[in-house]
Image (cartoon, rainbow over the protein chains, first blue to last red):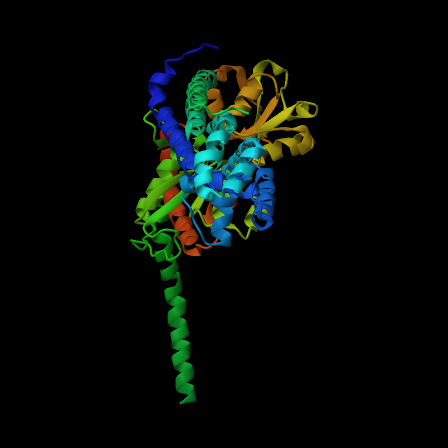
Length: 223
Length: 289
């Protein structure tokens, strides 16, 4: 069996279009699920059990369901139950947002718990407004704990977007598979795709290291 | 008066008796082979239940060589793509192809996501009676075969009893191979697609791959194809059709009509020849189509 990387000269442009779709999917999902995750994280740590209990139950339920099932629900079940026909990409974004909101919500929750208890007590004693204390005191101290798992889950998400191919999103892996079928060149194509994922992950790790340094330089204490 | 009626009736009957042979002779005189059967149809065909007006949304895997696959220019190509494109154009519609895995085609029809799909789904009792989609009239004779490596020592279906079998999960071709070999589904290696099955066969993870004659011929034409062979006896012979959304009986009628037309005017045969696929369209007359 010969090994012929020149297949990328022919099929590369088509496969790389899937890369842009993968990146757009990741960016869209993170852009939506990050603020939602913050809300979930706060709800998980709320003093009110009326906020905490439903957030805990929902988080437990959603995180327990494989993301592929959530995608199938968004794409195949919603049209039947709600007469809602989302396009493939929209359904994928919706499904991944639901899943990642609760995954990242737990990350935020853990980060908030890492802030020393005395800080919360001081805020309560000073009577600072909640939003201001969050923005100025709690979140800056929680960020060093949040960033590493946040980036780690984002890396998982980049790779997890391959699941979207099951509902018609022609992202990177789907396009690679299609190219393999047409050319019968699995090894050359899979090697190239693995390198692309490796480069994306390396970039995310670089972002993680830069973020960690930034927060440390600002004088915030990592727990 | 009564007599007159009898006479008239007798004369009429006699005239008919004389004319009858003449009529038969005229009918027999027609050269049936030279007749052109009218296959006119409404243009545009009024379709009231399409998911999106003016569009024919078709689910395809895009993962079957020669039938539906991505070409070098990044577009969907193949015999089925050509056929569906012509079908949509003849119905006055714009074709829109949605690429999903085979396991998503039928759920998508049930969920009202696609107007039609299936590249040639084998008829079976479950599919014929499914409330979720219609099967069209046959578009091909589905000849299921077993592909093995030439050096495997497997020469016939009788040698498969203890062999490790595999195929694409959910496909009837794998089921037929298993039942032919007398094996249980749990013993088989169910793979996600044709490529994986080919690699599994090449790597010795399976000893026989159950598939259709179209996919098998594409396998033999591809790289390392000289290492494979198709066992001479088929594992099953049936028919396969397209699937149509169960909410669209008018589309089913239209597709059935056009498929009859395409078979009659040689469109299907020409497309199979264009893409170098075994043509079974003329065999469909065996089952009355």
